[in-house]
Length: 390
Image 1 (cartoon, one colour):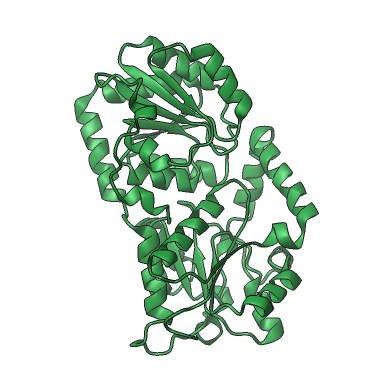
Image 2 (cartoon, rainbow, N blue to C red):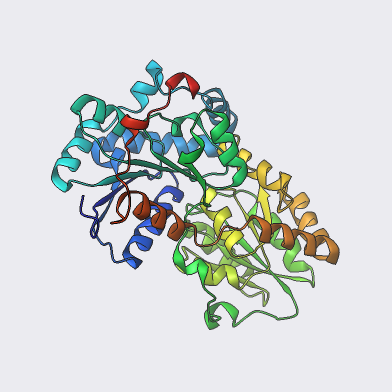
């Protein structure tokens, strides 16, 4: 390995937008350190495009129409072991394509931002030895992330680090760094006139984010009472759902305390303009909200990682969870009408923030495996902990 210019391969998946955004954040941090040989690979999309398209469709539909089924599957498999037949099948998709990509690009280290752990099986089959890194992109730890050949785990919180250790991962392999987000969130942005032009400085600004695919239900039932109140103004970000954007623009576009956008590239600038956020509890959006110091109102989390994310942040006193628009609007009003509660929530947010998470992760990777002063790093095959301990 060349300590001055390592080759990094990041494996992600396009189920939702979060895994890709985490990968882009890691890529940007490597670039900031002068390391430009970073390959992002959506393995399932490249290796099995038909299966990938089908599973993405089922994934999105399960969120919309069968959330209880998705949650049941997630929870039943949460403690899955890496050596079971089911795990072996799950982690074998894309092996041939990955072997080809490794031959073509000769990476020095593999990063996973999605728990599709093909590499351990590929290394066992071929005798290849590479450092493996997992970046867990939720505030919850599913068994799919855990494998004895993984050398380093970067997790969202100190509590998640303790859980990982309790599940058999050696303590020295787990760092509580936060979930990596774009470097934009680590600096203060000048106000954007396109955003602030219609805003009233006397009102609290509520950011409603419908997700990358704009699938949040009941949006108009949240917007209407907030706009009817004299206290609030609303910015709605509809993601890629152009139909939702059109409907909201037609219905509320003439209101002075409302703005609507589609897919937003400068999310950090947008969040820094607002006083709180209504959103679905995906790991990346929650991390971005934490970085932006926004109180969070989490709407109808889907059973599985979403619900577990939401319940964890609620237990920490930095988020409120609601299942009806009216309950959510009431939570927003109650928080901003109680100065002591708002101050306490802001303090709790500050305690949970983990700034510069992408930079911390990349710096640790470079120190562990690519520093000229380091002692040779051991790979998973040399440090493997007993599978039964996981």
